[in-house]
Image (cartoon, rainbow, N blue to C red; front, side, top):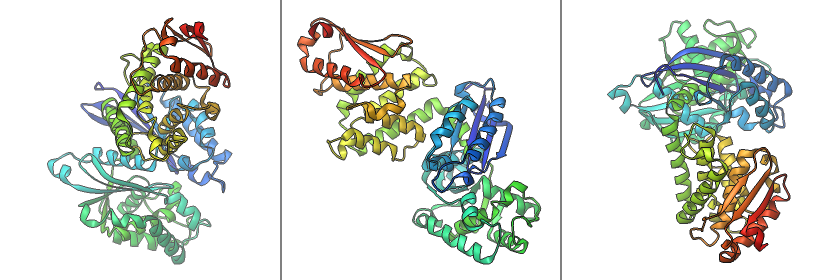
Length: 511
């Protein structure tokens, strides 16, 4: 991107929503504006894991204020990501439908692994870049409202990462619901946190890292308090945590807590945050942790800066890794992918040679990924393999992909064969329908697992309608009777939806 380009990242966290705006300057991003609002959406999940109307409204109101500030930004200059609360919420689609409209930009719900990867990128990019720092083995910890991410990495490359469902909001609600601070509640909260984080012992052992960094949220708040008390800036130590715990116990409750350096909005969740941080220090044998300036939102910004190349490559690598792991027939995947792309370009000519930042270009690329993975479920069983494939894609860790992006791919894989009733909820999206039809027809035309004859075969979409027409040259049905039969069956399959497919040319004459 050119120097002077503005980029914006929106972080829909469990405790706070954040908007970070920066300007590109020779490969670096310099902050021009930062807005943080305490939304505390993480404590708005009810017993059925649905966001309450009040919690949704708080989020919508905040996004409306962010939207006013983002007026004039291009789509390629903004990315919004949502984390643990919206990963958990059963009614997240209801929230996101309105949230995206209010914000004016897409919102990606990212997996725990993807959140950890972006956190590491944010931390690494904001540290000094020297030969020594590039060789430094780093442990990065981010304690958020409902999840804690722990990452090992070196330079700009994360090497091991995990997300644990323990955080300041969740632990405050569970162990400090009445706001009281006692030795017993802190002991119980720390033991419970260690039980969740116990798996980290085998991966994040002290001999695998040189320096520990703490990112954002709880660790930043603790660092501010310790600086106000006269401790070394930018450092959290065991002694400092012991001192802070003593202060909390002497106060007895969040309401009575009076401590320099702590914002009012942090007091309600400090008990849970400190108990989780102390558990991390004990489990990983940390003596001191440096407070990092970088965070999730910075990782999002730097990835926006490089998204065309780096992230496209990362997601392509993820698709390739999945294809290899599940032993997909590479020749058939290529064949179906090439055929689907050619058919899709007939429906969306603007996609030919389009930038991956454009909607047509993105649609073509996603179609290619879905085609490459459409047989992934055969590793489980050839019976209903499309259903197995959709399940795999919905539940796999996929670096570079947001949860909703992987779900889009899973729905294409689910719908590439069989009845269409199972996709009723997404068949109102014309872009998805064009991708799906191209993929289904490609699978039909490649059923013999050889390159199909596409000469004279055309798909036409009448603009403003829900109607497609498939036409072939006159001799095509006689040369390919099985393909013609399958195409006629495809017409019937779409009759049960609110879309219509007609046959013309040789197909109609042979019917």
